[in-house]
Length: 243
Image 1 (cartoon, rainbow, N blue to C red):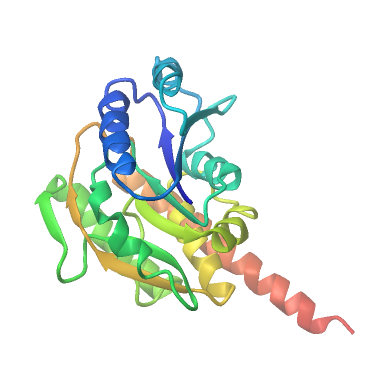
Image 2: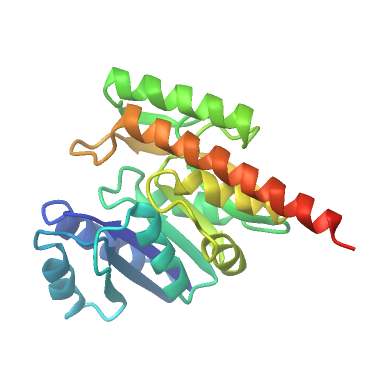
């Protein structure tokens, strides 16, 4: 069974066509599936529109959070509610087409429990680029992540990732970073647990109306990630010092 989590915050305009496209694609697959829209405390009609769609779509459920907690919190709630052997999440704008999903899922064999979409590897196709300043900040941020925590990964922030059920539970249950930096923490936890993370080049197109501030959010993410690494190191040191 496949589970697809769609985190949504004030997505009343973009979510309805996304759900139509998602249903068309998933209905064409020869396997059972579920779609979970997790509303992150929206102030618009996101919940009502998703609920209306669920009324005629048995595989769709809506999970509203009581208040805005961040994208990481929304994805975490969906991952832990999901029942699929493979659990994917996608941004509500479908900037990475769902047709890329099989290429990620086929990598989940052996020790590989996480597959992430990448805009930075050879073979990726960028149909519409981000604004220049934001694209530059993304590259700088990912370069710093490779140095500080995640060597070998070139694009940790693309909002399209797939996990085995075990990896989803193991990585999202203890999640601390609940906003945009959650991707980095999840991938760090996956590697700490001994799972391989596969990075897969995909087709991608920038969509307007982003909720991300490249400068502010990148600085906050790096701070949170460094704090997480210190916490992990301290826990390991404490365990080693126990009699």
